Image 1 (cartoon, helix red, strand yellow):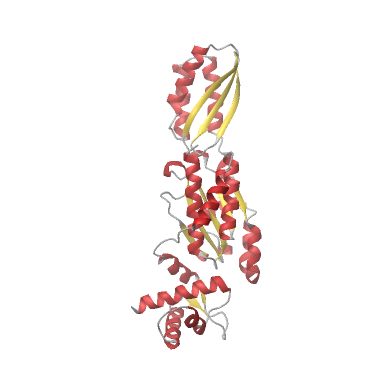
Image 2 (cartoon, rainbow, N blue to C red; image 1 turned 30 degrees about the vertical axis):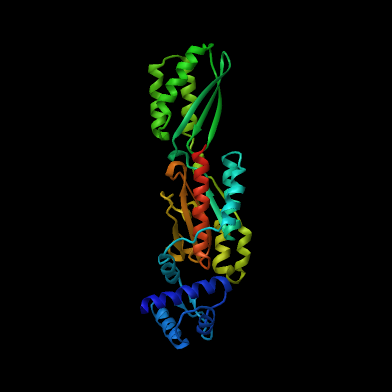
Length: 337
């Protein structure tokens, strides 16, 4: 009973501190929250929470603020992630449904996340190495020119023109199209490369070698692995009171995409939202920063990560809900191709 009451006091302190940006006193807690106990009991609970390291007193005459440990307990004890409102869900679907290609999906996702959370949003482009081949199309532009179209599970579409030394018949083109699709469709990138190379001895000919060479070249190009989009940096202006400790290091980190990728961490599957608070992150200089992230991708396969980064004083329940909702919606878009 005592533990539950102290958890309620901690929850109230976190919520008030996030909304007011001011240290929270016992009198304010009693007035704003129906805790059902006397101010003296609340003060005792706050003293116990402080002794255990969940809250701290920044100034001798001030109220208390949560520590990283306090935020962690608060997040861990959330019974459920706060559901998005109908208006928020509609805003996500309306904005993302208008996307015309993968680049547009990523850019719209960043803007949506940053607007919903009022934080800095980071979206990693789908990682090529973790995706699978959805389909290969070969189209004759002329007897000696083909258009090879490679469609990946991430929604990425690559087109290349293949120049042939000799004309190819419609029948041979159909056989080649069937062979490369049998080899590559449904395979992850590394396996697809191996399978396509094995097609050459079976369906011999200059056209086969040329097409396979082009497709393999596209598949082994992993430059997209480190592409990310960032949005909402202006939201950091809200944290002017902690500029040197939280905002300045984060602004510098936004220039380093490798740092942001490491901050986001590995993509997680199954809709799990990862929260790393303050010192739990990989960089000591960003110890005043929290990251809320999750994986996204088609058919519950996490091929990339998206999330938000910001000072530890954030609305964790609302942010977790927004990150999860946007990830699910983007995954659905990729699933539908």
